[in-house]
Image 1 (tube, rainbow, N blue to C red):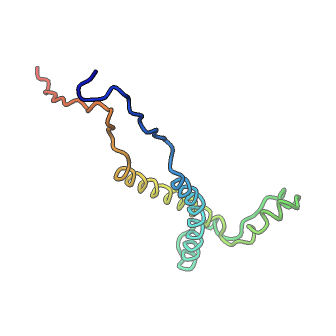
Image 2: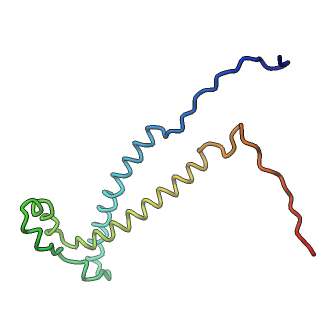
Image 3: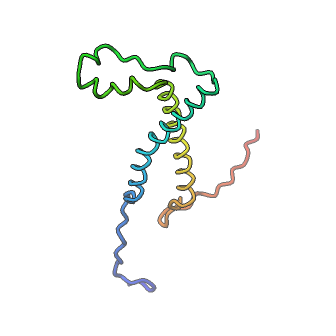
Length: 140
């Protein structure tokens, strides 16, 4: 028998190590929104750059040239055909990829900061505290 605690074991609440469903929804939303935002922003950037005579490689400007095998299939023409009518599609695509990488990196940094501030504590109640060692400098 113990003096200060009871012999009966209290049941610990079960902790699940799963992500809250709201965060999954936000991640799915960002997975859809980041490409849309970056593509729309790249269209505006390329349009502004062409108007103001920015140095954009001429290979990226103009209408895209589709391979000949696409025109042999009616299905591929229906799917990829509208892309051939877009002016400066390659420049828009290149800038959109760079913007997606930049926005994804920015969101990763913001996520790390929020997790550091509002995340779980580094040490739990059952962890041993780190050792407090003061090492002396070695001298010969």
